[in-house]
Image (cartoon, rainbow, N blue to C red; front, side, top):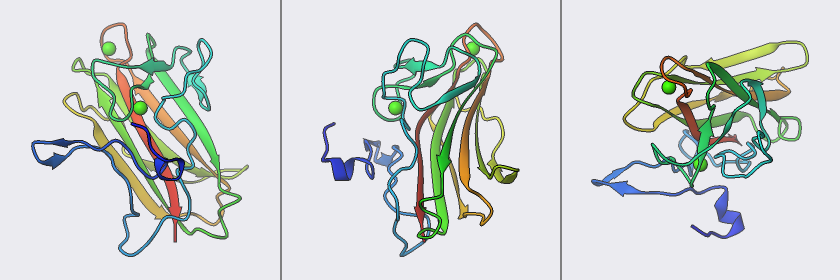
Length: 194
Ligand SMILES: [Ca+2]
Ligand SMILES: [Ca+2]
């Protein structure tokens, strides 16, 4: 779907299924009357960017070296592709988002991401860590999830800790059966607001 540039980061592909909104459209902060002060701060947030062989643009492979785009079985939550760890037992992909430029203008954050698993039992976990050079100031973590039937929305919101200089976003997947590590991720967003 082609969209004007200014709209693109604040919108996503919406779909109505049986009258129920099933997409991850994120247009307002989870606080009444508030408005976002930033666009999505995560780069390549939906794994639509094509990288060099063995690379996922903007993301660091902490565990596993087969992170890549996956396109079907299941289809993506947003766009054409999503994050897939390949034939690895345990895998982690991470991105650090600098808060420095935004700390004086934004007090709160809103994170949304989608996870899914293959039916055989592999697990997907999304973690948000507010950090500085010395320590992890605050962690948001729902633990390992198993949602084989649909994309499951994980959402965190709160006040940005004063001591935090950046946010580390971690996608962690663990294989339980088969060759592939089938904990999937898609359509991540991190926006700030007051
Ligand atoms: Ca995607
Ligand atoms: Ca598997």
